[in-house]
Length: 490
Image (cartoon, rainbow, N blue to C red; front, side, top):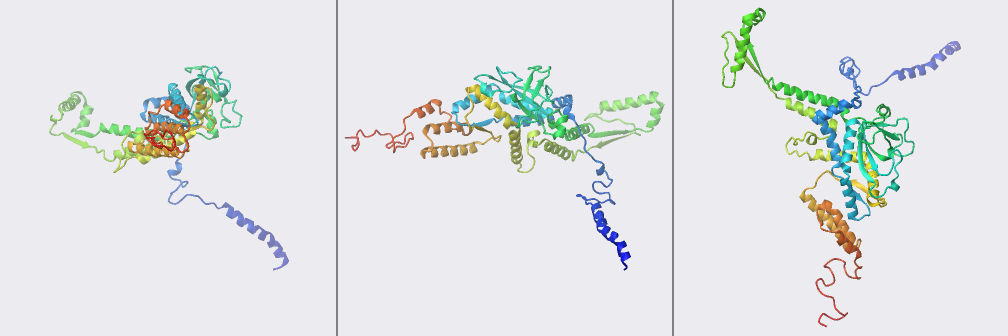
């Protein structure tokens, strides 16, 4: 090959790898099965390819939300059951405080109906997409930041629940301080239609906010920085269930279809007059006397036919619809519909355990921060001082223990406390406090009084070598020797 030809092929040789790379770049692989000839798979011009998803935006329709909550028992159960389960068991506060002080704090929570207010806040947050519980502190202005250090005894007056439609968040004035509230509205303006605090501005530090379903950024902006109603996600499943249920109810009216074949019916109808009136009287006569023990009188040329309808399989359809609704609401059938578990040896314990774990997850996400703020404020209002350093709380379990389980827990708890006492890890007063505090769970030692604890705290320390156990001295039930080395008889 001449130099001229080699020189002419050089550009082509250089372009060959680029062409191959370009051809390889145009190739692509799909991550799902497709068969274009059989029109199987997404994107192959079939019915599945025409499916899509769109926005419902029913969270913005307050009237429709309220109509669904009032008229649909399923919507009411979906909204109420989770909120009630999140607040019905309460919490257990762990801190270095006397049992009587913790009891006083719990009594104040009950007196001010704080749990009821939190339950309503969660309800309206789930229904509308967001709600607030305003902490009412006497002597402080609502538009100013909450000053917890200045809260004295008796200043906390309770919670006022306001749903998202009773307040207008300050969308142009957001929280810019670093923390969990960063980016949220700094103020909430109460509308004129509110039952209280009308036209007042509330600082974000004074509210306990509970949203519905968390949304991504742009969708949250479209909802005025609120969440989404829990009903919006199960709206299509709710329509399917109600439509199926109503359709089955309509079929009951057509459980049996009766057909009357009349000779020359078209001619009778077309002629009208006495012939048509006679036919109508005949049908009315049949309907009047056709009872369980009656007779059906027909002309010899007429024919009467009854077609029975079978309801086989409809129960399975309803059950499938109910299961889809249960899955969409994250509530088991036994809790949502109140029905017993189906199947051989079915108890529903597994489903309820999983549901309770889900409730605990919601408690940790939705109530941990609001309750921390609330308990701090209430403690200062009850005791005039904050809770001890290092305090914490845990949500009580929703699963109720049987008598056997409670007895086992009580025995183990009592044994552990007494072993710590006998090993001198704790003193008698601490032992009595632990037994009294555990009585709420075990049901034991409920008669331990504060006077007994005070007496144990003021008791002199035991003599070295003697066990500080009631009735377990060196000689239980006997008097000590008057002098060392001498017996009782001297």
